[in-house]
Image (cartoon, rainbow, N blue to C red):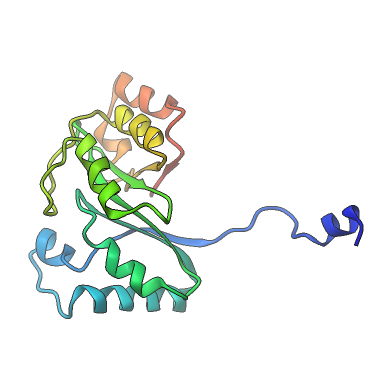
Length: 183
């Protein structure tokens, strides 16, 4: 096959994948909502991965609040399924703006813990503590760490559109490190 024939046989344009980039660990409902949870972390992860496959979701981001302990069960559950799993965490900036911090599939849990520490989050348990950086500083630091920062639930309280105003909002929107927002 000639070079041009090979090029013509390739798909046209971009390919789109359904993603769920704010998947929470088993403990989330009990820790942050005061609701009882059933099963265990492995069972929870398997249920989420199975549901994702049913819905055609091909990408999962595991982003617990200031916590990375829920990543391992999801990695196990996603093995061999064709689902891409990106580990990370969710932070609140020093202004209270929510940010999803997502890293490459092979990022180890210990490295994620160190990344959290760079934001002043040193408690290994899930918390809602504020990071020691502003929203714009978090964006830059996540890029430096090799990850992607996403402004989480931007239209809700604690989101980018409601939580910042004036020049702070202008600087956030102009940041070259703001690559995506979640609505």
